[in-house]
Amino acid sequence: MAENQPPESRQIQLRIDESKMSTTYANTIRTSTTNDEVVLDFGMNLPVPGPDNNNPSLLFSVGSRVVMNWGGAKRLAISLGQIIRQYEERNGEIQLNPGNKPGSAPRLSE
Image (cartoon, rainbow, N blue to C red; front, side, top):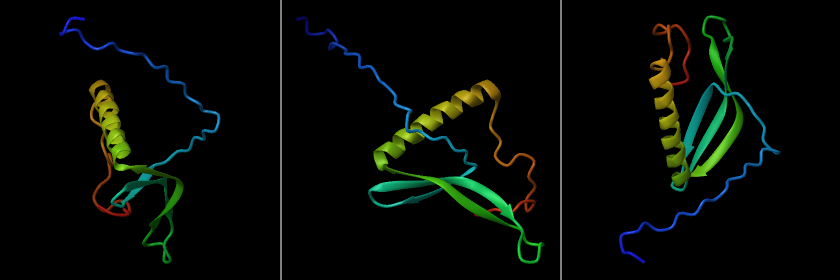
């Protein structure tokens, strides 16, 4: 065998089982961490009237929780970065809070 030949590549077929999958919509995410894990809570921000109707608030209704190790979280971040970059190259920059003026909508945090 020649010394400069690349190692043989082996193809592995990936099969995806979606039989137990459920689909939900989330417009917000909350993150928390430990030394070993990243916790992602996906859910909906729902506006609710305040006690005097002058100070509305948001209710974060958690629909799904995903717990992953730091390696999985990094792979997720890389994958999301790639698909967002591709989307923005085709469609332009995604605006966060388009048209919102400061103080026009309640926020959970900065």
